[in-house]
Each structure stands twice: as structure tokens, then as C-alpha cells.
Image 1 (tube, rainbow, N blue to C red):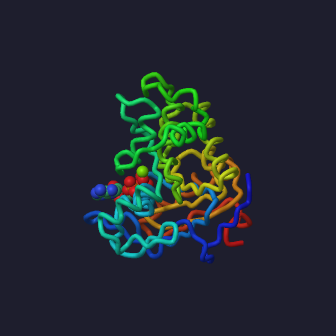
Image 2: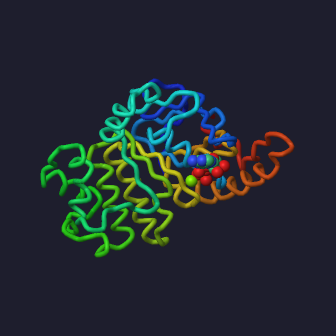
Length: 270
Ligand SMILES: Nc1ncnc2c1ncn2[C@@H]1O[C@H](COP(=O)(O)OP(=O)(O)O)[C@@H](O)[C@H]1O
Ligand SMILES: [Mg+2]
């Protein structure tokens, strides 16, 4: 576990959300989120089901637009962009991996990895595609179709596809959620290495305290707000916090109750 700085006061931001609200009908999915992610850091987003984790990730990645507030990625503000400019920015600057790997079954690993560039009208070189697969340890699987690959290998192909444009930020919504424990750990080790070796910025939603412990920083959402923001946590500490967070959610009806932390010495602002 490294101890990357996690304060919200620097100008050097890979992602910056300011006062982000997102209303779905009568549901306040995000209720004023401020969050700055520094380049080259690994952030986990946790919180109870329905706390707004996916909405936060989608707003940060330009897949959804906030009702109010602003989002910046790699120094570009997304808020005022046209659909076309937003699409281009998503394609060139943002990588996204999902729980279900979303590979095209009829295409080989190499063709899947090349797809985003092909859709953009570019012709990726064989070398670039192979290099992207090599980054995730799959150089020897380039000609295999998804059904010929294990779940972990499929998620690694999805990672290679997300990384081929060298995005400013890689977002993952439960990227290990569909994998067994051992395979999940392999993917997490790979994500950690991407951060440590290549300074890839990663923001990952997860339910799993063990997965979150691979991150430098854990942001806890409760009821659409950041309830805490901690660094250097062990899986045990995260599990304790998660249990406390759930208690806080149940107590919400009687007013906003911040979950009790296991230890205040771990707060990111300290
Ligand atoms: N497209 C949508 N339409 C209506 N409500 C939504 C939509 N997306 C999310 N919500 C609601 O917003 C809240 C947060 O959802 P979500 O961000 O998916 O939470 P999480 O990922 O933490 O489980 C939930 O109450 C959910 O039902
Ligand atoms: Mg979700």
C-alpha cells in the first residue's frame, strides 16, 4: 500500500468534480459531490447499494451529465461540451471497464482492442494492439475469441481496449465483480501495477474491501454525498467502515448521520 497524497486542494487534477448534483426524476442520486483525483493515483469508491457510486463514475467519465456542478477530466471541463466534443473526449481521454466485460464475441482479442480506434476512423498498427495486449500480459492471446478466454483474461482484454488510447483516467465500475477471488486478485494486481509503473490514474467502484485495499485512497459515498475520504486503509479497516456506513444509511430518516469511523487518524485530510 502506497501513501499517495489525496487532498483536494491541488491544481494538478486528473479528475475534478465540483458541487456535482444528479437528479433522476425525484431521486437525488448525487447531492453535491466535490472530489479531486490526482494523476497517477488509484482511488476506490465504496458505499451501500444505491448510494450513487455508478452515477458518480458516469458523471466523472462523461457518460452522464450532472444536473448541476462541474466535471473536469485531464484539465478539460466537460460541462459545456457539445455531444460531439464530449464523444471525442471520451474516446481519446477516458477509459472505462465494466463488470460485464462487454467484448464483441465474434472478434478476436486483438480486434476487440483495436475496435475503439477503428470506430474513430483510425487504423491502429498491429504493433500498438500487441503492445496494449502485452501491457495486460496477454500478448500470446491476440488471436483468441472471448469464448476461448477465461473471465480474468476477458477483463484484461477489456482493460487493453480501454488503455489503447492512453487515457487520462481509467474508470472501472465493479471491474472485478464478476470474477472469482483468485482471478479478481490478478486483475487488481494488474491495476495496481498500471498505477505504480505507468502512473495510470484509476478510479474504481467496488463493494469488496479487499479490492479497495489495493487503492491509495477510498472515497465512501452515503446517500449521494462523500461521507469519508481515507488513505492507507487495510481491507479489515475498510470492512469495518463499510459496516459502520451501512448503519449510518439506516439512520438517515432522523437526519444526516455520518458513519462512525474506526479511527480518525486515517482521514485523508490529516
Ligand atoms: N437512470 C436512472 N433513473 C432513475 N433513477 C436512477 C437512475 N440511475 C440511478 N438511479 C437512482 O439513483 C440512485 C443511485 O444509483 P446508483 O448510482 O446506480 O447507485 P450505486 O451504484 O451506488 O448502487 C439510486 O436510488 C438509483 O435507483
Ligand atoms: Mg452501481
